[in-house]
Image 1 (cartoon, rainbow, N blue to C red):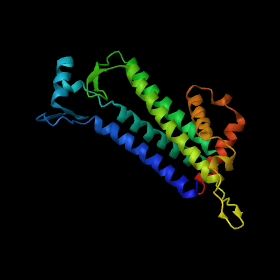
Image 2 (spheres, rainbow, N blue to C red):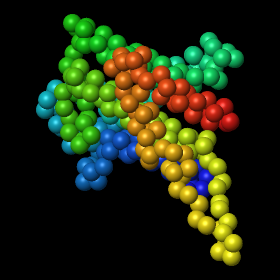
Image 3 (cartoon, helix red, strand yellow):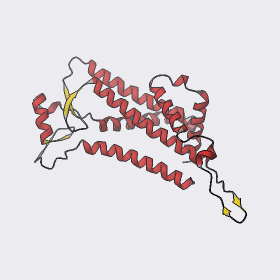
Image 4 (cartoon, one colour):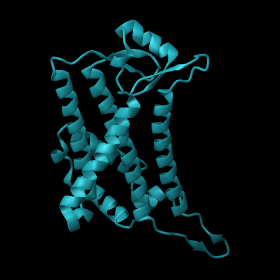
Length: 242
């Protein structure tokens, strides 16, 4: 695997992730071309058939929430970015070290801020029942459990993407051109990238994903110190080149 292939893999993974987020959004928009007319709320467009289902349940589309798998994922990404900016402003010159640990802190800070907001929302005794448009287009009751489930999904999706990116960055960091010439036979095939690095395919990705998920469970402090050092080394090297 040459360096161009590794870079292409990174951008393909990023584009797949971005396309997935876009698909989540598109699936929530009216797609039934037989519906003549779309009812609008101040939060979301909903097809005529979806509005009819909502009206049957709640008697008013005013109780339709903007919550969806897309909106929670988007909100999580924005909150992680906000904490990144806050941490960078606070840390100043020290912001270029231990970047993996810093991202873990940003992710968990974003997660718990959003979780606390959900808990506070449902603790309000005056809260009215809300409804939301599920991924399959149906209108369902919105519950605390559903909102927490969507938040967990957003955290997991972000973790998967960043874990995959970590492995790709590791390949870029450790890339070395190794071509062995044999007399009369030209250049031999370049060794497999996994063999050059001395790691198994997916090892770094799995290590990073486990670290992210241990953080949300409150166990990051117990995560392998050597694994943390390795992951920080990858992030520090690659991101400081940008």
